[in-house]
Length: 324
Figure: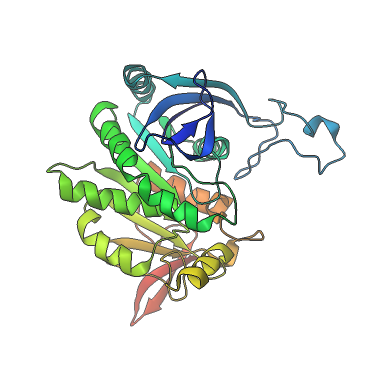
């Protein structure tokens, strides 16, 4: 599978797409290219990213094996012209001429973001071009403050990348999935584009998973970017430890925290608290039930209550939804 990318991370080498967990030395530098990722389809489980591990007695899982693991087999750096030509070709191969753009969250390396992009495209059965925007996360749990700064300093490169996708990819439809702190870059970037341009980029679906965005900032920005997409969907939870730590550190509630659920006209808010797992409980957008719901959104928007969702009523109407 080919994952196209744009990033303002510091390149490790000049010969292949390999990037450090820090910004490029020259601010705003945008690297383009693609990675070819092998998918272990015979052993792959929905939502999982199968990678080598020593925590197994099966020695075949100790080292990269394309039959058992996601493996980046090609790392291609490309010029703008090469990137546009290859992306247009990938878009044209799909009958819907569409793009799935993924923006990763906090504590994520470039390679991990590539693997997640490939996993999402496979599990969503996406028929189109898969694109990643990778901002310079430090990929370290204790570097939260630095990551937050980088999610904003990336805006010039992010806006340039999104603008080019919209204008030069040949895509009729672009869907966006943003996770965690990636939503901070997304909403600030879209708000700036909306203020700066007469015809800013427009998207079909914007899906915000566990968004680490200050509620008051979001309200202020939403007036600007609220027309950037046909539909907005929020997945939130009340037991997300990563967002809980962010609230304790910054002192302000995040829109990804469902205590109480963040509600706004034009936003479908979905509480995923009942189904999330794991220690941090922050990457629940890869849960098979949420992926199934996102698949429905991308295939053809149907407002809640969709299959598997039930409304949480207030004054005889559903303000938000949860999984059955």
